[in-house]
Image 1 (cartoon, rainbow, N blue to C red):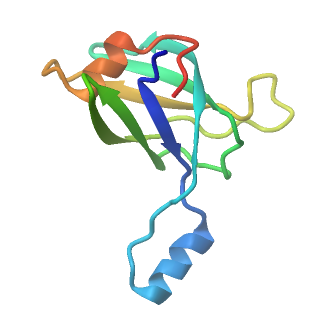
Image 2 (image 1 turned 90 degrees about the vertical axis):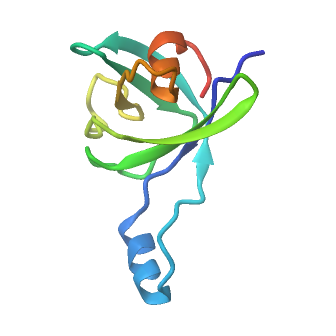
Amino acid sequence: MRFPLDVLTYPLTPAQYFRSSLTGKPPRSTSTTEATVISTAPNGVGATTIRLRPDNPLHTHRAGQFITLALEINGVRQQRCYSITSAPAPATSPTDSRSLELTVGRSGRGSVSDYISDTLAVGDRV
């Protein structure tokens, strides 16, 4: 069984940022969920847009927030942060209001981004 990406972290809520300002500790999201890749599409030269549907709905996110993806490549677990490039769809929208998009630039150096661009497929669990 293949699990190329196994962790998707939630964006932080404003309350979590506020609490971190009181404690002096950097804000970190501790919530994780799995997701399904529902589409992949080339986006210009050297970039791929992937749409993910989390198993559990995310807190309301805004374009520009980021999530951390953890994945295993050749037996080595790696984590990378990617910006969310989609705004949440309204609940009445015909598009899946729980999904989010990430646009990943391909580096050409065998990196995590290359793996996502070249290997990740619709239906993969992340």
